Image 1 (cartoon, rainbow, N blue to C red):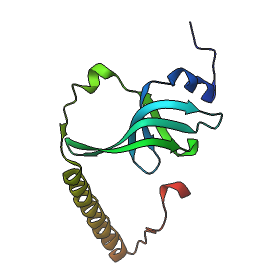
Image 2 (image 1 turned 90 degrees about the horizontal axis):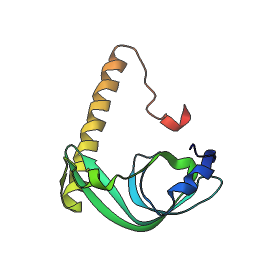
Image 3 (image 1 turned 120 degrees about the vertical axis):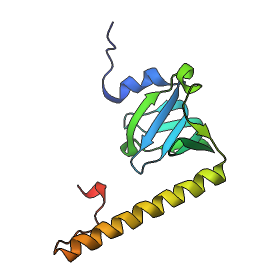
Length: 134
């Protein structure tokens, strides 16, 4: 039988389940959904922030986490069987943060070189714009 709930009311079926939430700023949170309201604001319990770099990941404990509904990009239930069989290697928080910093620096350098090449060809790229402005 199909679920008769629409919109954010459908999230009521997910209460007390382990969810993965992708936020607009790129962060990935994993925790147990404890509460939801009509605006899709979420309360996660026993939350971790998972950082991925390549085939490695690290988890930062966050505890109770309140998420404004407008910041949620993706939300889904975690399959416990598949969660234990991830092809990723868990590393320490310090190591994953260092790897993330290096990856961000490399991405910024690449963007700087592309902007420089475009500018030399007479094209101007406004790097002040963010995805939220589109």
